[in-house]
Amino acid sequence: MTTGGTSALGGLKVLDFTQMMTGPFATMMLGDSGADVLKVEQPDGDPFRRSGETTLGGDGAFFLGVNRNKRSIVLDLKSEDGRAAARALAAEADVLVENFRPGLIERSGLGYEALREINPRLVYCSISGFGRNGPDQNRPALDMVIQAVSGVMQVTGTEESGPLKTGFPFSDLVTALIATIGILVALQARERTGKGQRVDLSMLDASIFSQVPRDVYFDLTGITPTRMGNQHWDIVPNNTYATSDGRQIMIITINDKFWQILCDATGKSEWKTDPRFATKAARLSNRALVDESLAAVFASRDLAHWEAALSSAGAIYGAVRTWPEVFSDPHVVQNLLRTLHHPKGGTFKVINNPLQFSDTPTHIHLAPPMLGEHDEALARAGGAAWPAFAQPEAGEERPTP
Figure 1 (cartoon, rainbow, N blue to C red):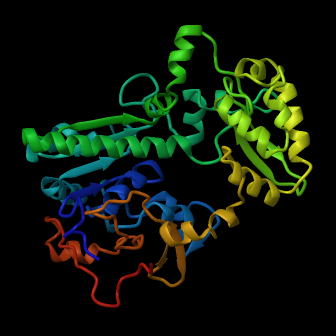
Figure 2: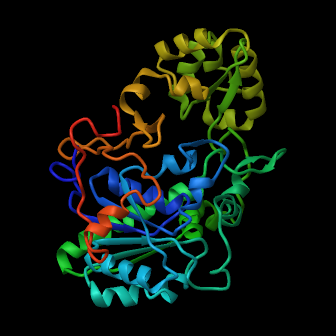
């Protein structure tokens, strides 16, 4: 596999100064579509290399999950030689992505204003926690802090549980996805104008933006949405119910049609005309009774029975699957899981890019790099030019489909 040819972003040079989760996930997305991503690390490496107790070949599992399709070089940005090499690389780059605390990269002489003078076509993406301006600009920001400050945590959980974080790093990932969109938009604008620009995004702003359309509801009512767990403020039923074998199943009926389908599938056809349940308004007024009645029905049979009955009826439902079930699903195994080889030994699976392109498919052509693995390529380029990308020879590719 190559970074050019049918790859949508083949030949695009991305200088990646990011670390931890948000920035690396964004640059990984670009690398999946063929961009040549050069990950610039400090001498002690991306902190994610040492994060967590699970490692492979000395690299943390979290690092391995978001750094494929990149090459790693080490530059000490505290030294003049390191900064000079970074400026030389930026002069040739199409995209630069950084998530340093605001002001730090400017003090290194690698800020947007400085680099646009030597490369006016550069698309320069800055990702911060709280924004580059304002009283909180220098506050350290991690995913759960941003979930708390943005209001995401306030509407997650139940009234009994109180505010909860999501079960995955929501703020990290939604920021990365929006940043990737911003970079691609800026590249498209460059096609028309010939000029690069700065793309500026904070985790806080991205997380608040992600709460649409509840913003309009809050503006019109002044009411903070209630923490309702698996329930929905305007749909009943919209909840999980336990089956006789201790599993959980998610049930949603978005209108009266699907309520009637659910009634037939559960053997409760009489509920279709029961005045307590027959209409959306009635179900909303009798939320507790609907949940109680459905809980009793679903508790009478096991998950296998209900999956068959609901599927054949065309109901809207979903079993709450365990992770072993998700990652052994034939569709997931065939389409989403790829096995990579670590250069120090051992293999690990990653989730493949879910985008399906008819003409420019994504590829995993490089496993996550070791720290400074491609310093030699930089040295061959004289340390002051973009290192040539050496395609793997036959039998040397690390990924195993």
